Length: 487
Image (cartoon, rainbow, N blue to C red; front, side, top):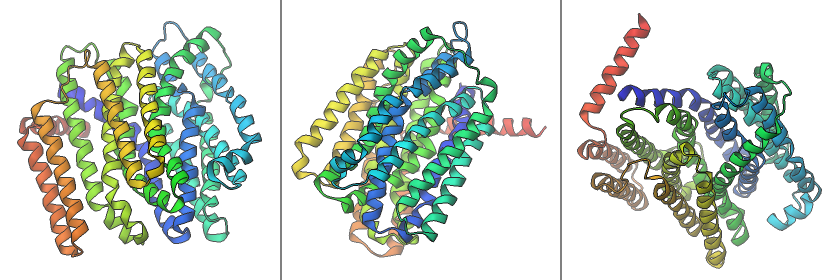
């Protein structure tokens, strides 16, 4: 059993590096933000980056998951047909892109209250190229070519970072430098990806396949749009209710919490569905699933704790003291990734049973819930209100997936030791927040953070979410693999 679990984490690590690079990029850009942008300018930038996140998913049409799904159905379809169909489907985005570009001035005035039409054009271009870039990345992942996968991601990373630094340090473009860097990086990355998958680029179209892919992918698209709206719509409503200053505070908290997204969630989501396909017929399926759930819980909460405890050190170290208030929002935004991981975990059962209608039900309920709360509370909207609405929506997302899929996954989230662990974890976070709020003594803060981290590890072992036996088996298995590899 432990070998099957290690296989999952190995797959997660290999393809997660590429996603981690994108998240590391966000951290490496922080010094540029603190040095060259004031808080209002960062608020504008964060707003446009949120729009890019939303539009990239929308233009992607959920096709990346469809590409994975139909690659496994090799008896019915040729993989070259799947790739050709994916490009053809994404080309249909022109029916959305052309009107958006034509009305960009009116849209920017409606959303932001001023003419940002050029910036909005950049947002649309970056989003559409990102959507197309997901196809080469998806092909390389499905064909298990990790180094080529990483080369595509690294191309974007290197040229985005270098172009942004060059432009922001030598011109007066300020936040626009990030948009120009984004379009340079993603365009070059896309062409590198096309080169790597050139052997699969054969025009071979099957309209029956396109219909099937669209039916499956659009159901996934609703889910993807829901998750990205949960993370990004708060910017839109914060801007409507207050302004770019509060938006910048919220955006900085979100940026730090995204470390969890890149370090753990992205690798998990990349490996989860292919891993489930290989695991579903295993004789100890339910036992492995339960163990994985506990491992994922401990892994996520440990890194959430570290980010929550030490993000203020990073903020102060690189000169972002005006964003210090973001520190108190980071735990809530980081916890959202735990709830999102639970959603993907239980939604895997829907994927295995091809219950796409349930994806749609979850997406519609959560979107309506989230939007209704924002509209009802718009008059009292601030960063705290937006944070509560966002977190509540993520909890609902996870609970719906848990309720609709738990007949297949026999995992009891509300088992006694798990409930005790959640309570203890929240109390540790609250303890750190209180100490940080009432004390400015650096030595006291450091000691308290170390005590809290030690307490977390003790609680994990005490509640036996990860037992000593588990650790010994993991250590023995990994040691054997190292010895074997050396031989």
